Length: 151
Image 1 (spheres, rainbow, N blue to C red):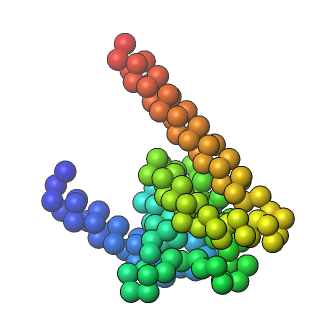
Image 2: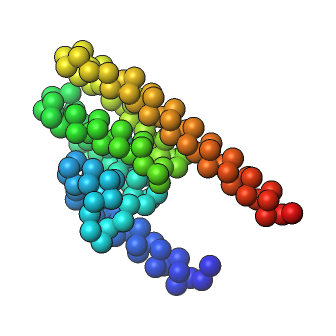
């Protein structure tokens, strides 16, 4: 790869990070669902959305969601993570970030489920398992194509 290509890629990635960092939950969901004109969803974009939700703020030492946030915000974040898990662009790294989300917000998810008679905890587990199965299917198909291509 040429040096210019690497520079161009890192500039595109920086622009992606910048754009996602300014989005609210609704805009991030529109991005994940590929509904933002001239801004195609990508593997890096999925990872960046999940990183934003799971990364602790350096200054405030707080995560994106807090226990005292409005229930609407929590629900939007939970639904966003489920949408990420259903994306065709999902990678193993994205799944790891979803697992981190579940770990970081375990208490908030449990309380939300109890108060609203929801089942997000099990929906997250199901979504991760389905996403892993989808990745396994892609890998198996690629192996099959590689074998067919060698003959």
